[in-house]
Length: 380
Image (cartoon, rainbow, N blue to C red; front, side, top):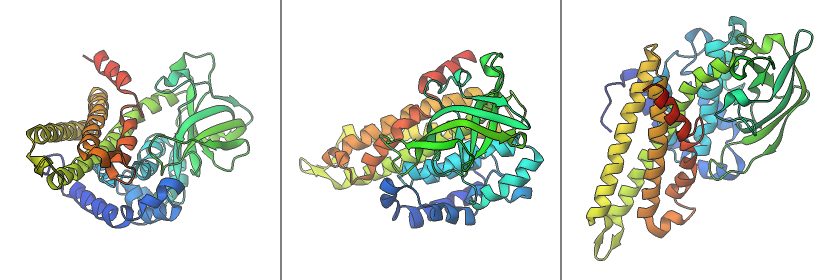
């Protein structure tokens, strides 16, 4: 791949190190994780190598990089072809940990970040509910003041890492009288807190290696010290971190799309039909070519949005464009990759079949395409 103008030597080193790690340590082993989940020792090993500290400030054990580092990291994890493994890591590094690095107090950073970097504390973020997904303001989970803390009650749904996380950042309504977006707060809840449980693991179409759970909160008391940021400011924290979340998972989708297309090119150059390789068929060559052009366009759009964020700019429109464009593009790419594999693309032993299932969530999770298009339209 031609080096982008957005990728400096540090980011290229992260790309090389991550790709080497994925090819050596993940690809040969991850097939077994599709039924049992990612082993904790694998995540601990990644932490030891420094992968969990890319976005964490140096004073807390990380290396203090920005959104571009997250995109590059996610892209290379996506190339593993095991989406469940990739999202298990990204939920910790890019969906949950930023609530501490961006909004946490100095005391909270000192208390939690070192363990998050070393892998001792695995994290998750619990926003989605049975009746509240992209419509965050519609959430019903409540947090009522009691003594020097709050009592949480409610249910969260589709929570990645929910059943394995040591610390979950939970969004709850702290002011029932306020307008939907103005009465939400974020709380850090430890897995052994009385009244908090992962009630059931959810079976999914894809991402089989990832833990996805329904979380129940029944009179869960959390201390004031576990309120992240300011009370009633949680909605704005969620909206802010959505930008980071969307870039990371679209980085994953880019890596998955690129690897799937590479595997498909190899296949059609070797597979013969009607006396010659499939690659000799103009219809196939040209469709592969346009899909590569779309991946290249999506990558540069993603890098540009991440670069804007790293410059401190409001990149909401650009990130929404990334989420809408790359999410849909990834599904088109994988459709064609399965199609050009023919019958083998429908067989579970092939990487493209797994990627086809895994990448379907790219246009849903973190903000559905339709929601993203409205976000773009508001800014036109």
